[in-house]
Image (cartoon, rainbow, N blue to C red; front, side, top):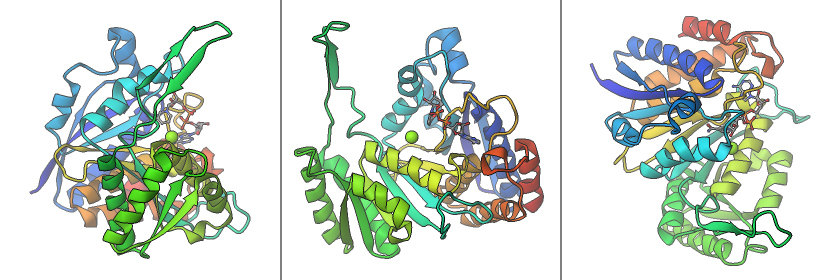
Amino acid sequence: MPTFTISVIPGDGIGLEVVPAATRCLERVASRHGIGLVFNEHPWGSEHYLATGRMMPTDALDTLAASDAVMLGAVGHPDIPDTETLWGLLIPIRRGFQQYINLRPVRTLPGVRGPLANDAPIDFLIVRENNEGEYSEIGGRLYRGSPDEIASQLAVFTRRGVERVTRFAARLAHARTGVLTSATKSNGIIHTMPFWDEIVTELAADEDVQVDSVLIDALAARMVLKPESLDVVVASNLFGDILSDLGSALTGSIGVAPSANLNPERNFPSLFEPVHGSAPDIAGRGIANPVGQIWSGVMMLEHLGASEAASDLMRAVEEVLSAGLATPDLGGSTTTAEFTDAVLDAI
Ligand code: NAI
Ligand code: MG
């Protein structure tokens, strides 16, 4: 029996509610397909921080490296600055494990209504650069608190970094419609973005796909007005982050959106997590939507090569949504536990 070891970090807030929901579903679908899943749970996150001053132990990456994949809920605590929670756990894992692809499908699920009036089905992929770009540690602040205070932050784009994310996205596009949409801003950001554009053009020619280069502001508008015109979108770290929250809103709720942080070379485990955060406003009430976490689990099964189990689990989620079960974020009154039980039955 093929067996995979999964490191599980529920983290904070609703992560503690949606992660157990997803592991139950994964366990059920895996066993039906003769696949073994061993879950090693790590109690890292904000409680660990309040007790030890660190979000995770210093040797956490060594611990995680031994597993086939990592499943994360979310991190974020109202009493701890987001810079501590994010840079103390998620970003070190993404960077340490060279997870330079953040893949975020934007797809309307059956039974879920989006906010757009025509509510036409939406189905495209956002490939976000995940290791560099605007999210850089280079910079600083001077003259704090004085009228002369300044802050500067250096965006870092490397040829290697832009090439590898573009190549990944171009290959996906090649297998789909053959059109790669690139998010840019080379009219306003005059060094890094023309560099991005040049590399995207080179790589697209190399991978035999057509490039549709769109300024990020216009692209945001187009996502709302003509989402059906998009298939694969490649974007820098910041642009991809923003577009993917917009994408999740267009498809109904941030609670359903999944993501995969991939190390395509498989030198390190990849990490699977929903797009949403710890949602302190609803944490502890048992009403969080588990779909984003379960769908992230589907992406994990696909990454592990268990594609039949992955599609069975996705079908089960879609069946439950089609039957009209919906958590409050989708306008219903189903609880996390009720929704999860229905998915388990559908499996
Ligand atoms: P959020 O995604 O946690 O919540 C935004 C809104 O969406 C809230 O009203 C929340 O109730 C709702 N929501 C989110 N997920 C939901 C779900 N599964 N079911 C139902 N409703 C859901 O984003 P917010 O409020 O900006 O951030 C809260 C904390 O989470 C912050 O500390 C932030 O830094 C952190 N965060 C962590 C992320 C991660 O771990 N990858 C990603 C985004 C935010
Ligand atoms: Mg985000």
